[in-house]
Image: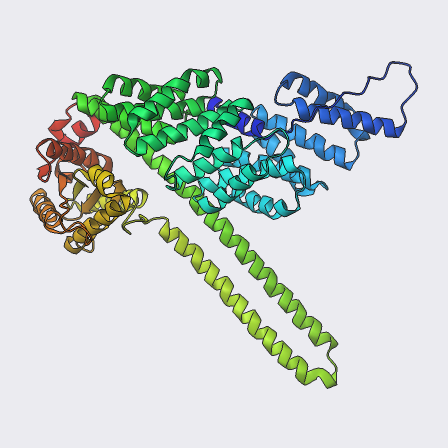
Length: 607
Protein backbone atom coordinates (compact mmCIF):
# COMPACT_ATOMS: atom_id res chain seq x y z
CA UNK A 1 0.00 0.00 0.00
CA UNK A 2 1.24 3.52 -0.75
CA UNK A 3 2.82 4.75 2.52
CA UNK A 4 1.97 8.42 1.98
CA UNK A 5 -1.70 7.72 1.23
CA UNK A 6 -1.96 5.41 4.19
CA UNK A 7 -0.45 7.97 6.55
CA UNK A 8 -2.82 10.67 5.30
CA UNK A 9 -5.80 8.40 5.94
CA UNK A 10 -4.53 7.37 9.38
CA UNK A 11 -4.25 10.96 10.57
CA UNK A 12 -7.63 11.91 9.09
CA UNK A 13 -9.26 8.99 10.89
CA UNK A 14 -7.33 9.64 14.11
CA UNK A 15 -8.27 13.31 14.27
CA UNK A 16 -11.93 12.95 15.16
CA UNK A 17 -11.89 9.65 17.07
CA UNK A 18 -14.01 9.42 20.20
CA UNK A 19 -12.03 9.62 23.44
CA UNK A 20 -14.45 7.67 25.64
CA UNK A 21 -12.91 5.22 28.11
CA UNK A 22 -14.86 2.13 29.21
CA UNK A 23 -13.97 -0.46 31.86
CA UNK A 24 -14.18 -3.95 30.46
CA UNK A 25 -16.59 -6.36 32.11
CA UNK A 26 -14.96 -9.21 34.01
CA UNK A 27 -14.53 -12.32 31.85
CA UNK A 28 -16.76 -15.28 32.54
CA UNK A 29 -14.91 -18.19 34.17
CA UNK A 30 -15.30 -21.72 32.80
CA UNK A 31 -18.06 -23.60 34.50
CA UNK A 32 -19.65 -20.49 35.98
CA UNK A 33 -23.37 -19.84 35.82
CA UNK A 34 -24.43 -18.48 32.37
CA UNK A 35 -25.15 -14.77 32.45
CA UNK A 36 -28.67 -13.57 31.75
CA UNK A 37 -29.40 -11.75 28.42
CA UNK A 38 -29.15 -8.28 30.02
CA UNK A 39 -25.68 -9.08 31.31
CA UNK A 40 -24.71 -10.44 27.89
CA UNK A 41 -25.78 -7.16 26.31
CA UNK A 42 -23.87 -5.08 28.86
CA UNK A 43 -20.76 -7.22 28.32
CA UNK A 44 -20.94 -6.80 24.53
CA UNK A 45 -21.60 -3.06 24.89
CA UNK A 46 -18.46 -2.76 27.01
CA UNK A 47 -16.35 -4.73 24.53
CA UNK A 48 -17.57 -2.62 21.59
CA UNK A 49 -17.01 0.64 23.47
CA UNK A 50 -13.53 -0.47 24.49
CA UNK A 51 -12.66 -1.41 20.89
CA UNK A 52 -13.93 1.99 19.70
CA UNK A 53 -11.82 3.77 22.30
CA UNK A 54 -8.48 1.99 21.63
CA UNK A 55 -8.60 1.61 17.84
CA UNK A 56 -6.11 4.41 17.17
CA UNK A 57 -3.72 3.65 20.04
CA UNK A 58 -3.44 -0.17 20.08
CA UNK A 59 -4.26 -1.83 16.76
CA UNK A 60 -3.31 -5.28 18.04
CA UNK A 61 -5.69 -5.24 21.03
CA UNK A 62 -8.35 -3.61 18.85
CA UNK A 63 -8.06 -6.44 16.30
CA UNK A 64 -8.24 -9.14 18.99
CA UNK A 65 -11.35 -7.52 20.48
CA UNK A 66 -13.03 -7.48 17.07
CA UNK A 67 -12.26 -11.20 16.67
CA UNK A 68 -13.80 -11.93 20.10
CA UNK A 69 -16.90 -9.91 19.25
CA UNK A 70 -17.12 -11.54 15.82
CA UNK A 71 -17.24 -14.97 17.44
CA UNK A 72 -20.35 -13.77 19.33
CA UNK A 73 -21.92 -11.86 16.43
CA UNK A 74 -25.12 -13.90 16.70
CA UNK A 75 -25.68 -12.39 20.17
CA UNK A 76 -25.48 -8.78 18.91
CA UNK A 77 -28.64 -6.72 18.61
CA UNK A 78 -29.21 -4.44 15.61
CA UNK A 79 -27.48 -1.36 17.06
CA UNK A 80 -24.50 -3.40 18.30
CA UNK A 81 -24.14 -4.97 14.86
CA UNK A 82 -24.04 -1.50 13.27
CA UNK A 83 -21.20 -0.43 15.57
CA UNK A 84 -19.39 -3.75 15.02
CA UNK A 85 -19.54 -3.37 11.22
CA UNK A 86 -18.44 0.27 11.48
CA UNK A 87 -15.38 -0.81 13.49
CA UNK A 88 -14.61 -3.60 10.98
CA UNK A 89 -14.87 -1.10 8.12
CA UNK A 90 -12.66 1.35 10.01
CA UNK A 91 -10.01 -1.34 10.57
CA UNK A 92 -10.06 -2.49 6.93
CA UNK A 93 -9.55 1.11 5.83
CA UNK A 94 -6.71 1.55 8.36
CA UNK A 95 -4.76 -1.45 7.05
CA UNK A 96 -5.31 -0.50 3.38
CA UNK A 97 -8.13 -2.89 2.41
CA UNK A 98 -10.17 -0.03 0.95
CA UNK A 99 -12.76 -2.08 -0.93
CA UNK A 100 -13.69 -4.11 2.16
CA UNK A 101 -13.67 -0.97 4.28
CA UNK A 102 -15.91 0.86 1.81
CA UNK A 103 -18.39 -2.04 1.67
CA UNK A 104 -18.68 -2.20 5.48
CA UNK A 105 -18.99 1.59 5.86
CA UNK A 106 -21.52 1.84 3.01
CA UNK A 107 -23.68 -0.73 4.80
CA UNK A 108 -23.60 1.21 8.09
CA UNK A 109 -24.13 4.59 6.42
CA UNK A 110 -27.16 3.30 4.50
CA UNK A 111 -28.87 0.97 6.98
CA UNK A 112 -27.97 1.83 10.59
CA UNK A 113 -30.84 2.98 12.82
CA UNK A 114 -28.41 5.26 14.72
CA UNK A 115 -27.94 8.66 13.12
CA UNK A 116 -24.68 9.03 15.08
CA UNK A 117 -23.24 5.86 13.52
CA UNK A 118 -24.54 6.81 10.08
CA UNK A 119 -22.86 10.21 10.42
CA UNK A 120 -19.55 8.68 11.58
CA UNK A 121 -19.59 6.10 8.76
CA UNK A 122 -20.49 8.74 6.15
CA UNK A 123 -17.77 11.12 7.34
CA UNK A 124 -15.18 8.31 7.18
CA UNK A 125 -16.38 7.38 3.69
CA UNK A 126 -15.96 10.99 2.49
CA UNK A 127 -12.34 10.90 3.62
CA UNK A 128 -11.75 7.48 2.02
CA UNK A 129 -13.37 8.44 -1.31
CA UNK A 130 -11.50 11.75 -1.45
CA UNK A 131 -8.14 10.01 -0.98
CA UNK A 132 -9.09 7.61 -3.78
CA UNK A 133 -9.98 10.50 -6.16
CA UNK A 134 -13.57 9.22 -6.39
CA UNK A 135 -14.86 12.75 -6.13
CA UNK A 136 -18.42 12.36 -7.40
CA UNK A 137 -19.07 9.61 -4.84
CA UNK A 138 -17.39 11.70 -2.12
CA UNK A 139 -19.58 14.76 -2.83
CA UNK A 140 -22.69 12.58 -3.02
CA UNK A 141 -21.88 11.32 0.49
CA UNK A 142 -21.13 14.89 1.56
CA UNK A 143 -24.65 15.94 0.54
CA UNK A 144 -26.05 13.12 2.67
CA UNK A 145 -23.89 14.22 5.61
CA UNK A 146 -25.05 17.83 5.27
CA UNK A 147 -28.68 16.64 5.32
CA UNK A 148 -27.95 14.74 8.56
CA UNK A 149 -26.16 17.61 10.34
CA UNK A 150 -29.27 19.33 11.83
CA UNK A 151 -30.36 16.05 13.47
CA UNK A 152 -26.97 15.09 14.94
CA UNK A 153 -27.06 15.83 18.67
CA UNK A 154 -23.90 13.93 19.62
CA UNK A 155 -21.30 16.70 19.80
CA UNK A 156 -18.32 14.48 18.94
CA UNK A 157 -20.03 13.02 15.87
CA UNK A 158 -21.14 16.49 14.79
CA UNK A 159 -17.60 17.80 15.28
CA UNK A 160 -16.22 15.03 13.03
CA UNK A 161 -18.89 15.67 10.41
CA UNK A 162 -18.19 19.42 10.34
CA UNK A 163 -14.45 18.78 9.95
CA UNK A 164 -14.81 16.38 7.03
CA UNK A 165 -17.36 18.67 5.34
CA UNK A 166 -15.10 21.73 5.73
CA UNK A 167 -12.05 19.94 4.27
CA UNK A 168 -13.96 18.43 1.35
CA UNK A 169 -15.66 21.70 0.42
CA UNK A 170 -12.29 23.51 0.47
CA UNK A 171 -10.92 21.04 -2.09
CA UNK A 172 -13.80 21.98 -4.44
CA UNK A 173 -13.29 25.74 -4.03
CA UNK A 174 -16.46 26.19 -1.92
CA UNK A 175 -14.67 28.37 0.60
CA UNK A 176 -17.67 30.24 2.08
CA UNK A 177 -19.34 27.05 3.29
CA UNK A 178 -15.99 25.53 4.32
CA UNK A 179 -15.27 28.58 6.50
CA UNK A 180 -18.77 28.46 8.00
CA UNK A 181 -18.34 24.83 9.08
CA UNK A 182 -14.86 25.51 10.47
CA UNK A 183 -16.24 28.45 12.46
CA UNK A 184 -18.94 26.18 13.95
CA UNK A 185 -16.18 23.80 15.08
CA UNK A 186 -14.41 26.69 16.84
CA UNK A 187 -17.61 28.00 18.41
CA UNK A 188 -18.69 24.70 20.00
CA UNK A 189 -15.89 22.13 20.42
CA UNK A 190 -16.98 18.98 22.31
CA UNK A 191 -15.37 17.87 25.59
CA UNK A 192 -11.74 16.93 25.01
CA UNK A 193 -11.43 19.23 21.98
CA UNK A 194 -10.41 22.89 21.57
CA UNK A 195 -10.40 25.53 18.83
CA UNK A 196 -7.35 23.75 17.32
CA UNK A 197 -8.88 21.73 14.50
CA UNK A 198 -11.57 24.26 13.57
CA UNK A 199 -9.01 27.07 13.36
CA UNK A 200 -6.75 24.95 11.14
CA UNK A 201 -9.60 24.24 8.71
CA UNK A 202 -10.59 27.93 8.79
CA UNK A 203 -7.06 29.14 8.10
CA UNK A 204 -6.50 26.63 5.27
CA UNK A 205 -9.81 27.52 3.62
CA UNK A 206 -9.00 31.24 3.80
CA UNK A 207 -5.48 30.79 2.44
CA UNK A 208 -6.48 28.52 -0.43
CA UNK A 209 -9.35 30.87 -1.23
CA UNK A 210 -7.03 33.92 -1.32
CA UNK A 211 -8.80 35.47 1.68
CA UNK A 212 -6.03 35.36 4.28
CA UNK A 213 -5.28 39.09 4.42
CA UNK A 214 -3.75 39.30 7.92
CA UNK A 215 -2.56 36.90 10.61
CA UNK A 216 -5.26 37.18 13.27
CA UNK A 217 -3.95 36.49 16.84
CA UNK A 218 -6.58 33.72 17.09
CA UNK A 219 -4.38 31.55 14.85
CA UNK A 220 -1.43 31.65 17.27
CA UNK A 221 -3.85 30.93 20.11
CA UNK A 222 -5.13 27.95 18.10
CA UNK A 223 -1.57 26.67 17.50
CA UNK A 224 -0.94 26.84 21.25
CA UNK A 225 -4.15 24.92 21.95
CA UNK A 226 -3.12 22.27 19.37
CA UNK A 227 0.21 21.81 21.17
CA UNK A 228 -1.45 21.66 24.59
CA UNK A 229 -3.93 19.04 23.36
CA UNK A 230 -1.27 16.89 21.69
CA UNK A 231 -2.52 17.68 18.16
CA UNK A 232 0.95 18.45 16.81
CA UNK A 233 0.06 17.59 13.19
CA UNK A 234 -2.64 20.28 13.15
CA UNK A 235 -0.24 22.76 14.80
CA UNK A 236 2.34 22.12 12.06
CA UNK A 237 -0.29 22.37 9.32
CA UNK A 238 -1.17 25.85 10.63
CA UNK A 239 2.52 26.79 10.81
CA UNK A 240 2.83 25.81 7.14
CA UNK A 241 -0.08 28.14 6.35
CA UNK A 242 1.57 30.98 8.30
CA UNK A 243 4.84 30.40 6.43
CA UNK A 244 3.00 30.37 3.09
CA UNK A 245 1.35 33.68 4.06
CA UNK A 246 4.76 35.29 4.76
CA UNK A 247 6.14 33.88 1.51
CA UNK A 248 3.24 35.27 -0.53
CA UNK A 249 3.65 38.68 1.09
CA UNK A 250 7.35 39.09 0.32
CA UNK A 251 8.87 37.93 3.63
CA UNK A 252 10.71 34.67 2.83
CA UNK A 253 13.04 35.09 5.82
CA UNK A 254 10.04 34.89 8.20
CA UNK A 255 8.86 31.73 6.45
CA UNK A 256 12.30 30.14 6.85
CA UNK A 257 12.41 31.06 10.55
CA UNK A 258 9.07 29.34 11.29
CA UNK A 259 9.69 26.24 9.18
CA UNK A 260 13.25 25.55 10.35
CA UNK A 261 12.27 25.99 14.02
CA UNK A 262 9.56 23.32 13.78
CA UNK A 263 10.85 20.92 11.11
CA UNK A 264 12.69 18.51 13.45
CA UNK A 265 9.60 18.17 15.64
CA UNK A 266 7.49 17.41 12.58
CA UNK A 267 9.94 14.73 11.41
CA UNK A 268 9.54 12.97 14.76
CA UNK A 269 5.79 12.70 14.12
CA UNK A 270 6.42 10.57 10.98
CA UNK A 271 3.81 12.38 8.93
CA UNK A 272 5.42 12.75 5.49
CA UNK A 273 2.58 14.72 3.82
CA UNK A 274 3.00 17.81 6.06
CA UNK A 275 6.82 17.40 6.06
CA UNK A 276 6.80 17.52 2.24
CA UNK A 277 4.71 20.70 2.45
CA UNK A 278 7.28 22.20 4.88
CA UNK A 279 10.17 21.30 2.55
CA UNK A 280 8.43 22.68 -0.55
CA UNK A 281 7.85 26.00 1.23
CA UNK A 282 11.47 26.07 2.47
CA UNK A 283 12.72 25.44 -1.09
CA UNK A 284 10.61 28.33 -2.42
CA UNK A 285 11.72 30.65 0.40
CA UNK A 286 15.44 29.90 -0.05
CA UNK A 287 15.08 30.41 -3.81
CA UNK A 288 13.63 33.87 -3.20
CA UNK A 289 16.52 34.60 -0.81
CA UNK A 290 19.02 33.52 -3.49
CA UNK A 291 20.31 30.59 -1.39
CA UNK A 292 20.50 28.06 -4.23
CA UNK A 293 22.16 25.15 -2.30
CA UNK A 294 19.41 25.14 0.33
CA UNK A 295 16.72 25.66 -2.30
CA UNK A 296 17.99 22.55 -4.13
CA UNK A 297 18.31 20.57 -0.86
CA UNK A 298 14.75 21.17 0.26
CA UNK A 299 13.34 20.84 -3.26
CA UNK A 300 14.80 17.33 -3.44
CA UNK A 301 13.50 16.58 0.06
CA UNK A 302 9.99 17.71 -0.92
CA UNK A 303 10.04 15.26 -3.85
CA UNK A 304 11.33 12.42 -1.68
CA UNK A 305 8.62 12.98 0.93
CA UNK A 306 5.71 13.49 -1.48
CA UNK A 307 3.21 10.72 -2.09
CA UNK A 308 4.65 8.51 -4.81
CA UNK A 309 2.45 8.36 -7.89
CA UNK A 310 0.44 11.40 -6.75
CA UNK A 311 0.95 14.90 -8.22
CA UNK A 312 0.56 16.96 -5.06
CA UNK A 313 1.24 20.67 -4.70
CA UNK A 314 4.46 19.88 -2.80
CA UNK A 315 5.73 17.71 -5.68
CA UNK A 316 4.82 20.37 -8.24
CA UNK A 317 6.58 23.11 -6.22
CA UNK A 318 9.67 20.91 -5.72
CA UNK A 319 10.11 20.36 -9.46
CA UNK A 320 9.56 24.06 -10.17
CA UNK A 321 12.23 25.16 -7.67
CA UNK A 322 14.77 22.60 -8.93
CA UNK A 323 14.12 23.67 -12.53
CA UNK A 324 14.79 27.33 -11.64
CA UNK A 325 17.87 26.48 -9.51
CA UNK A 326 19.51 24.50 -12.33
CA UNK A 327 18.58 27.20 -14.83
CA UNK A 328 20.27 29.88 -12.73
CA UNK A 329 23.35 27.72 -12.34
CA UNK A 330 23.53 27.24 -16.10
CA UNK A 331 22.89 23.47 -16.02
CA UNK A 332 20.72 23.38 -19.14
CA UNK A 333 20.27 19.62 -19.37
CA UNK A 334 19.26 19.25 -15.70
CA UNK A 335 16.99 22.28 -15.99
CA UNK A 336 15.25 20.72 -18.98
CA UNK A 337 14.70 17.45 -17.12
CA UNK A 338 13.17 19.16 -14.12
CA UNK A 339 11.14 21.47 -16.36
CA UNK A 340 9.62 18.47 -18.12
CA UNK A 341 8.70 16.88 -14.77
CA UNK A 342 7.32 20.18 -13.48
CA UNK A 343 5.05 20.56 -16.50
CA UNK A 344 3.71 17.01 -16.05
CA UNK A 345 3.17 17.52 -12.30
CA UNK A 346 1.58 20.92 -12.82
CA UNK A 347 -0.80 19.60 -15.45
CA UNK A 348 -1.82 16.61 -13.31
CA UNK A 349 -2.28 18.80 -10.23
CA UNK A 350 -4.44 21.30 -12.11
CA UNK A 351 -6.41 18.44 -13.69
CA UNK A 352 -7.15 17.10 -10.21
CA UNK A 353 -8.28 20.53 -9.01
CA UNK A 354 -10.58 20.82 -12.01
CA UNK A 355 -11.91 17.30 -11.44
CA UNK A 356 -12.81 18.10 -7.82
CA UNK A 357 -14.53 21.37 -8.72
CA UNK A 358 -16.41 19.82 -11.65
CA UNK A 359 -17.48 16.81 -9.55
CA UNK A 360 -18.94 19.15 -6.92
CA UNK A 361 -20.88 21.11 -9.54
CA UNK A 362 -22.19 17.94 -11.21
CA UNK A 363 -23.34 16.41 -7.91
CA UNK A 364 -24.91 19.70 -6.84
CA UNK A 365 -26.80 20.01 -10.11
CA UNK A 366 -27.89 16.37 -9.94
CA UNK A 367 -29.25 16.97 -6.44
CA UNK A 368 -31.27 19.99 -7.57
CA UNK A 369 -32.49 18.09 -10.65
CA UNK A 370 -33.60 15.12 -8.51
CA UNK A 371 -35.52 17.43 -6.20
CA UNK A 372 -37.21 19.00 -9.21
CA UNK A 373 -38.09 15.58 -10.63
CA UNK A 374 -39.59 14.53 -7.28
CA UNK A 375 -41.66 17.69 -7.32
CA UNK A 376 -42.88 16.81 -10.82
CA UNK A 377 -43.97 13.35 -9.63
CA UNK A 378 -45.69 14.81 -6.58
CA UNK A 379 -47.65 17.21 -8.74
CA UNK A 380 -48.57 14.45 -11.19
CA UNK A 381 -49.85 12.33 -8.30
CA UNK A 382 -51.87 15.27 -7.01
CA UNK A 383 -53.46 15.71 -10.43
CA UNK A 384 -54.41 12.01 -10.54
CA UNK A 385 -55.82 12.18 -7.03
CA UNK A 386 -57.96 15.19 -7.88
CA UNK A 387 -59.25 13.52 -11.04
CA UNK A 388 -60.35 10.55 -8.95
CA UNK A 389 -62.24 12.46 -6.23
CA UNK A 390 -63.95 15.19 -8.22
CA UNK A 391 -67.74 14.92 -8.54
CA UNK A 392 -69.96 16.78 -10.97
CA UNK A 393 -70.46 19.80 -8.73
CA UNK A 394 -66.68 20.28 -8.41
CA UNK A 395 -65.78 19.73 -12.07
CA UNK A 396 -65.32 23.39 -12.99
CA UNK A 397 -63.32 24.22 -9.90
CA UNK A 398 -61.28 21.03 -10.28
CA UNK A 399 -60.50 21.72 -13.91
CA UNK A 400 -59.20 25.15 -12.99
CA UNK A 401 -57.04 23.65 -10.26
CA UNK A 402 -55.78 20.96 -12.66
CA UNK A 403 -54.96 23.67 -15.20
CA UNK A 404 -52.93 25.55 -12.60
CA UNK A 405 -51.14 22.36 -11.58
CA UNK A 406 -50.45 21.64 -15.25
CA UNK A 407 -48.84 25.04 -15.64
CA UNK A 408 -46.75 24.33 -12.54
CA UNK A 409 -45.72 21.03 -14.07
CA UNK A 410 -44.55 22.81 -17.21
CA UNK A 411 -42.60 25.31 -15.09
CA UNK A 412 -40.84 22.52 -13.19
CA UNK A 413 -40.09 20.71 -16.48
CA UNK A 414 -38.53 23.93 -17.79
CA UNK A 415 -36.46 24.14 -14.58
CA UNK A 416 -35.15 20.61 -15.12
CA UNK A 417 -34.18 21.52 -18.71
CA UNK A 418 -32.45 24.66 -17.47
CA UNK A 419 -30.51 22.65 -14.91
CA UNK A 420 -29.33 20.25 -17.62
CA UNK A 421 -28.07 23.20 -19.65
CA UNK A 422 -26.38 24.59 -16.53
CA UNK A 423 -24.36 21.40 -16.24
CA UNK A 424 -23.05 21.93 -19.76
CA UNK A 425 -22.24 25.54 -18.91
CA UNK A 426 -20.24 24.47 -15.85
CA UNK A 427 -18.20 22.12 -18.02
CA UNK A 428 -17.46 24.98 -20.42
CA UNK A 429 -16.44 27.30 -17.57
CA UNK A 430 -14.02 24.65 -16.30
CA UNK A 431 -11.99 25.20 -19.50
CA UNK A 432 -11.58 28.97 -19.17
CA UNK A 433 -9.20 31.04 -17.08
CA UNK A 434 -11.33 32.76 -14.45
CA UNK A 435 -9.56 36.13 -14.65
CA UNK A 436 -8.90 36.70 -18.36
CA UNK A 437 -11.51 34.48 -20.02
CA UNK A 438 -8.98 32.79 -22.34
CA UNK A 439 -8.04 29.09 -22.31
CA UNK A 440 -6.62 27.79 -19.06
CA UNK A 441 -3.51 25.59 -19.18
CA UNK A 442 -5.43 22.30 -19.48
CA UNK A 443 -7.69 23.52 -22.29
CA UNK A 444 -4.80 25.23 -24.13
CA UNK A 445 -2.85 21.95 -24.14
CA UNK A 446 -5.93 20.04 -25.34
CA UNK A 447 -6.66 22.50 -28.18
CA UNK A 448 -3.03 22.86 -29.16
CA UNK A 449 -2.57 19.08 -29.39
CA UNK A 450 -5.55 18.89 -31.77
CA UNK A 451 -4.24 21.69 -34.00
CA UNK A 452 -0.72 20.20 -34.03
CA UNK A 453 -2.09 16.78 -34.99
CA UNK A 454 -3.95 18.36 -37.93
CA UNK A 455 -0.83 20.31 -38.91
CA UNK A 456 1.23 17.13 -38.89
CA UNK A 457 -1.27 15.35 -41.16
CA UNK A 458 -1.48 18.28 -43.60
CA UNK A 459 2.26 19.06 -43.41
CA UNK A 460 1.66 22.69 -42.51
CA UNK A 461 4.08 24.56 -40.29
CA UNK A 462 3.02 25.98 -36.92
CA UNK A 463 4.71 28.26 -34.39
CA UNK A 464 4.41 28.85 -30.66
CA UNK A 465 4.83 32.24 -29.00
CA UNK A 466 5.55 32.17 -25.28
CA UNK A 467 5.59 35.46 -23.37
CA UNK A 468 5.31 36.86 -19.90
CA UNK A 469 5.03 40.35 -18.46
CA UNK A 470 8.27 41.91 -17.25
CA UNK A 471 8.67 42.67 -13.54
CA UNK A 472 5.06 41.68 -12.89
CA UNK A 473 5.79 40.77 -9.27
CA UNK A 474 6.86 44.37 -8.65
CA UNK A 475 3.48 45.54 -9.95
CA UNK A 476 1.68 43.30 -7.44
CA UNK A 477 3.99 44.28 -4.57
CA UNK A 478 3.80 48.00 -5.35
CA UNK A 479 0.22 48.54 -6.45
CA UNK A 480 -1.60 45.50 -5.08
CA UNK A 481 -3.21 42.43 -6.66
CA UNK A 482 -6.23 44.36 -7.93
CA UNK A 483 -4.00 46.48 -10.17
CA UNK A 484 -2.03 43.36 -11.13
CA UNK A 485 -5.24 41.66 -12.25
CA UNK A 486 -6.18 44.72 -14.33
CA UNK A 487 -2.73 44.69 -15.98
CA UNK A 488 -3.19 41.04 -16.97
CA UNK A 489 -6.66 41.66 -18.42
CA UNK A 490 -5.50 44.73 -20.40
CA UNK A 491 -2.56 42.78 -21.83
CA UNK A 492 -4.88 39.95 -22.89
CA UNK A 493 -7.26 42.46 -24.53
CA UNK A 494 -4.37 43.98 -26.51
CA UNK A 495 -3.30 40.54 -27.72
CA UNK A 496 -6.87 39.52 -28.63
CA UNK A 497 -7.14 42.43 -31.08
CA UNK A 498 -4.01 41.25 -32.92
CA UNK A 499 -4.78 37.52 -33.06
CA UNK A 500 -6.63 35.54 -35.74
CA UNK A 501 -9.73 33.46 -35.13
CA UNK A 502 -7.80 30.21 -35.64
CA UNK A 503 -5.02 31.09 -33.15
CA UNK A 504 -5.04 29.26 -29.79
CA UNK A 505 -4.43 31.66 -26.88
CA UNK A 506 -4.02 30.45 -23.30
CA UNK A 507 -2.79 31.45 -19.87
CA UNK A 508 -0.28 28.91 -18.55
CA UNK A 509 -0.17 30.41 -15.06
CA UNK A 510 0.60 33.70 -13.33
CA UNK A 511 1.80 36.20 -15.92
CA UNK A 512 2.88 33.59 -18.51
CA UNK A 513 0.91 33.16 -21.75
CA UNK A 514 1.18 30.99 -24.85
CA UNK A 515 -0.12 31.40 -28.41
CA UNK A 516 -0.20 28.66 -31.06
CA UNK A 517 -0.18 30.05 -34.61
CA UNK A 518 -1.42 27.58 -37.28
CA UNK A 519 -0.05 27.70 -40.83
CA UNK A 520 2.71 30.13 -39.86
CA UNK A 521 6.40 30.39 -40.77
CA UNK A 522 9.13 31.38 -38.24
CA UNK A 523 9.55 34.79 -39.90
CA UNK A 524 5.82 35.48 -39.70
CA UNK A 525 5.72 34.33 -36.07
CA UNK A 526 8.61 36.63 -35.16
CA UNK A 527 6.88 39.56 -36.88
CA UNK A 528 3.62 38.87 -35.05
CA UNK A 529 5.45 38.53 -31.72
CA UNK A 530 7.13 41.88 -32.39
CA UNK A 531 3.72 43.40 -33.15
CA UNK A 532 2.34 42.07 -29.85
CA UNK A 533 5.37 43.37 -27.96
CA UNK A 534 4.95 46.88 -29.39
CA UNK A 535 1.18 46.85 -28.73
CA UNK A 536 1.63 45.86 -25.07
CA UNK A 537 4.35 48.43 -24.40
CA UNK A 538 2.35 51.18 -26.18
CA UNK A 539 -0.86 50.59 -24.24
CA UNK A 540 -1.54 52.04 -20.81
CA UNK A 541 -1.49 49.19 -18.30
CA UNK A 542 -4.59 50.42 -16.45
CA UNK A 543 -7.01 53.32 -16.70
CA UNK A 544 -6.50 54.21 -13.05
CA UNK A 545 -2.70 54.41 -13.37
CA UNK A 546 -1.74 55.65 -16.85
CA UNK A 547 1.83 56.23 -15.70
CA UNK A 548 2.35 52.50 -15.12
CA UNK A 549 4.31 51.06 -18.06
CA UNK A 550 4.23 47.34 -18.72
CA UNK A 551 6.39 45.42 -21.19
CA UNK A 552 6.69 41.77 -22.13
CA UNK A 553 9.45 39.38 -23.23
CA UNK A 554 8.83 36.84 -26.00
CA UNK A 555 10.22 33.49 -27.07
CA UNK A 556 9.25 31.86 -30.40
CA UNK A 557 9.58 28.25 -31.56
CA UNK A 558 8.58 26.51 -34.80
CA UNK A 559 7.66 23.01 -35.90
CA UNK A 560 10.37 23.29 -38.57
CA UNK A 561 12.96 22.82 -35.80
CA UNK A 562 10.97 21.04 -33.09
CA UNK A 563 8.48 18.78 -34.83
CA UNK A 564 4.80 18.61 -34.00
CA UNK A 565 5.00 17.82 -30.27
CA UNK A 566 3.72 20.58 -27.99
CA UNK A 567 6.15 19.88 -25.18
CA UNK A 568 9.16 20.35 -27.44
CA UNK A 569 7.75 23.60 -28.81
CA UNK A 570 7.12 24.95 -25.30
CA UNK A 571 10.58 23.99 -24.01
CA UNK A 572 12.37 25.69 -26.93
CA UNK A 573 10.13 28.77 -26.71
CA UNK A 574 10.77 28.91 -22.95
CA UNK A 575 14.54 28.81 -23.51
CA UNK A 576 14.21 31.66 -26.03
CA UNK A 577 12.07 33.61 -23.56
CA UNK A 578 14.72 33.13 -20.89
CA UNK A 579 17.36 34.52 -23.30
CA UNK A 580 15.10 37.51 -23.92
CA UNK A 581 14.96 38.12 -20.16
CA UNK A 582 18.73 37.96 -19.87
CA UNK A 583 19.10 40.33 -22.83
CA UNK A 584 17.28 43.07 -20.95
CA UNK A 585 13.59 42.15 -21.42
CA UNK A 586 11.03 43.79 -23.75
CA UNK A 587 12.36 41.93 -26.78
CA UNK A 588 11.72 38.90 -28.99
CA UNK A 589 14.06 35.92 -29.38
CA UNK A 590 13.68 33.01 -31.77
CA UNK A 591 14.11 29.55 -30.28
CA UNK A 592 17.07 27.43 -31.24
CA UNK A 593 17.09 23.73 -30.42
CA UNK A 594 20.85 24.01 -30.02
CA UNK A 595 20.23 25.92 -26.77
CA UNK A 596 19.63 22.56 -25.06
CA UNK A 597 21.84 20.07 -26.90
CA UNK A 598 21.38 17.13 -24.47
CA UNK A 599 17.61 16.81 -24.84
CA UNK A 600 16.72 13.49 -26.53
CA UNK A 601 13.43 15.00 -27.67
CA UNK A 602 15.10 17.93 -29.40
CA UNK A 603 17.81 15.77 -30.91
CA UNK A 604 15.09 13.62 -32.43
CA UNK A 605 13.24 16.71 -33.69
CA UNK A 606 16.35 18.10 -35.38
CA UNK A 607 17.05 14.78 -37.01
